[in-house]
Image (cartoon, rainbow, N blue to C red; front, side, top):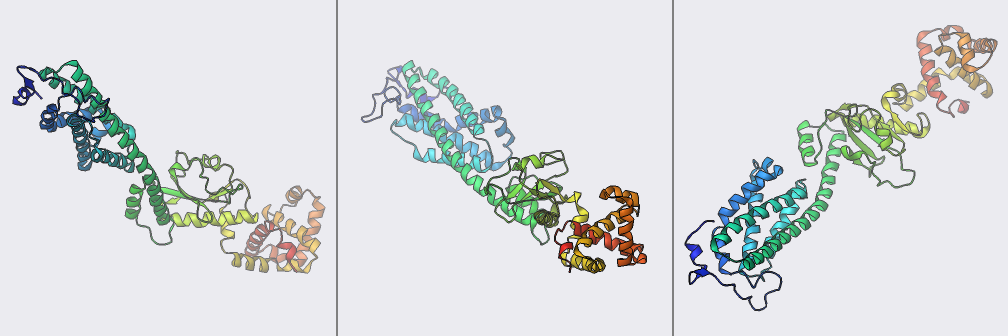
Length: 429
């Protein structure tokens, strides 16, 4: 903003333009009594070139804006912010009573946009500080060339401070509003993503990536689904503290979470998840490829149901991979009931009191490889007691049947599942 014909217009009789009295009704404290209004037009004529320098300085000193310079929309936002702030400053010089609602509204939208895009408010505030300081340096050179005295500089300083304060305040208000909207929108996007991952239909990797981008969720190669038991204190809305990287739906029944990279080294890897659930009983489905989340959900839901029945531990966190045989056995309850009814039918011939002892002895004998001393040690009884019970079992089942491999397998499956069902053996006729 060097010497030009415009500078001479601010000189009267070869000297600096005298301070201009404040317009009638102008508010106090805005430097109105000392700033020549004609300076506004000079600065307005130079506004675009000043904006160029300020914009370049912001990019140079604020790394986030330098990184975003390749994006056309981000460049346009930065340019608009610089131009509008300079315009507001010049408008205040021209008329100290000018309130600049339209420009502060623009900054309100800029702040809101930064929040919606997930950018930090500190980045915008840094740009305002850097841009304001650089613009003030440029203005200082111009006022020095014009020969304006210290009172004018002080008044301009007040107007500059007022301008930065107004746009920063508007941006902060917009950012706060954007954060509220962004949080709600982010939750909606994550809910849609979770629904897609756990749906029964085919899952398109492209659709997942598109939704994940909008939900600000890093797409992992594998996921696991966690289903939660009802909260003991009924505060269903309370989110597990380490769930920031997970997709969480506490409104579904049962509540569920999609955990990224469950076998990795992140916050959900290894054994880090149980403490994050605050003691809430839960079942973790197996790790599956990203597009097969529904399978992990089915297994986890089945495990939670078995926890409720006492077939799996009722408390703590149950990992499906640690109970695969139990889950397989109970994956078709009607078929399991039929297996148990047919395999254990011979026990209907003995009394209810004998039935439990014989079933317990038979399972221990089958699992020990027919080793009587081992069975006695397991059951804490004398070996002779075991041999006596085995003779009873041979009478009930037939000696050949107890040594038939397929019959032994059916008996192991039936008795293993029945031992977790407290009512099964006692309910036999």
